[in-house]
Length: 204
Figure (cartoon, rainbow, N blue to C red):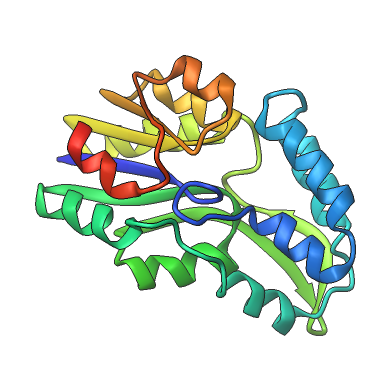
């Protein structure tokens, strides 16, 4: 078994889901400031996530859903997924973001699985609350470790851009920084400097 794990926001898609939701709802500046702190490793991921989601309280669910399904993919997203699967990899995404986005793009890209969080909804409005398996700074490490053991994975590729992806690098045979913050580039074995995901097929 070979496994390839991609982060979602700013890796598979060329956007941060929470920032786009915040822009549409009129709280983009507050969300963006908190996101930058978390992705650069300067703020606790859980605390940042909870506080950013709280800013979305009252947002219309259908509007949020439309936003999440309209995110722009990075160039080469389809090709890298299909290319790795052709080489025998199971390709999954791990996201501190939301099922509203990852489940849609799982189908669109043909991913084997997606792991992310759920925005709480009441009477067709976001409640400003979130729950799920990807809420803490080390959640991706724990999930990857569990998958490796469960599936008896022999080779693992990890691709990410933010500080909360670094925790997975110690479990990876190949760790790749893509569209990445400086702190992530320092920890990755390979740094892809272009914004074309197909380049990953040339370095693994």
